[in-house]
Amino acid sequence: MLNPARSRICRVLVLAGALGIGLLASANVRADEFSNRINAALKAIPEKLRSDAVLLPKLGAMDPAPAVMSTQQRAAMLANKGPGWAESSAWAQKPNQAEVLKALDEITKEEDRLKAFVFAQPYGVDGVSVDLVAKELYTELGDPPLVSAARHLYMPALERAGILCHVEASRRLEAGDLAGALKVMGDWLFFCRQMADRPTIREKKWALESMKLALERMRDLVYQEQITGKFTTDAAGIRKVNDRLKERRGFLQLERIEMPEADFVGREQLLSKVMLPNGGPNEAVFASTMARVSATERPLKLFSAAAFWEGARGAHAGSRDSSAMLKGIHDDWSRRWQLSPFDRYVSTATDYRKFVQTTTKFSVINGAFDDMDAIFSLRRELRAELGATRLAIGVCGFLIRQKTLPKSIAATRPEFVDAIDKDPYSSRGNDLNFFVPMRDTNKGPNGEEKPHTINLFPPAPAPSFALDLRSDVFVIYSVGPDDAPARCVNCTQTRVGVPGDYLLYPPTLSLFRQRLIEANELK
Image 1: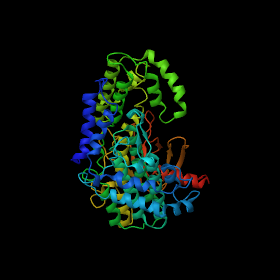
Image 2: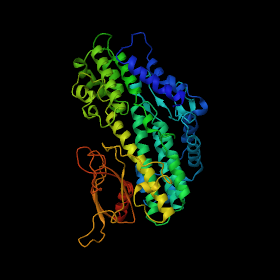
Image 3: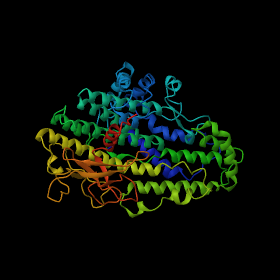
């Protein structure tokens, strides 16, 4: 059961889609009524449960991150092995950064979703303190307010907080504190799960990507410790981490992540502004308003954008057809959100791809939802990442206690894991796969054990490479989109349309860093 206020966020936005989309606002509706529909549930969150009120002031006081740590992904990859590490380690320990870590600890302690913190900053300046507005730690909607022209000015500060967490985790691991490193990444994971409840596509996509990286980094921390042959935490400490990662009765509950609804409300608002009731585009405002929306992140292109939209105006569909199309793509995605990824309907092209991206008739809608497919994919990937993280931590708990790797993944249950996670890419409902190289893989011509070679294809621009795995590590993998287990001979990860598995442990982050170190390319 959701926090009643949190639940209202979902219900208000879903109702906005079900009842409002398709009904163009009358001429006398105020421009900010649409943002008010989105903000109503956010403003209902009690002040004492607002994580934004605790965290954002601390982010405003942060010292600039070292230039070498430009993104979360780079901070995770470099860890404590790359250039500028001494500067980065010192930065993470300064008072302002320590206050951010303290705030993250405070707002992620509660695991009961009925009582937990919510990132509930409203959109626009209404209800946001003058100080946060002055420091650009809010979402700017402009004048008049347009949800489709939202600028999430606070998000670079969140990215810096993520960089800090990855640096601090590396620092604690270097100091021999695996439990502390995992705690920091767990706090960040929980905060990003709060952000996954935000109703805009950009915020939700950032949150899901950050959660995925945080989970991989937790496995990376465990892997770095494992290959040293000596753990700095005991089996009870490992179990404590897995207790926090429980899903159904914990805070994470991936199945409760809702489809982003605010962008649909935003496009409904936009149609009400640029279209004549029961007519076509409003010549007086169409080009200027659409230019403002399309150039939100690139203001220097405002003039050229206006010229483009003036040319697009004549071929655009009328208000009724545009509104009906917006409702149609919303309903199509809403249906897919509820279905199993193995449902035949999910494999068909979306209405957005079929009817919006293939024509210029619906330019007001086109481009607004290009990241929806990525959100659907990330939601599935997160199930694999979370399951693999629990299992990897469980196997390491077994290794600490028994001084050997388990014969099967089932041996970790129930002491170190509550259940063996299912593979979200397996149409048969099979578990995630586990094996120990050499011990469980093909032998040589004389029955001798030999290294197991995997071919790894990390996301671009990283190059593919081959790697021999020995019996000092273990492997956890998903069958991936092709739904065919192949012992990770080819790890094509989540690429659709190519055969291969989805390697989860050892983490690709760890293996790619190791390759860069060996090639003296970690720069």
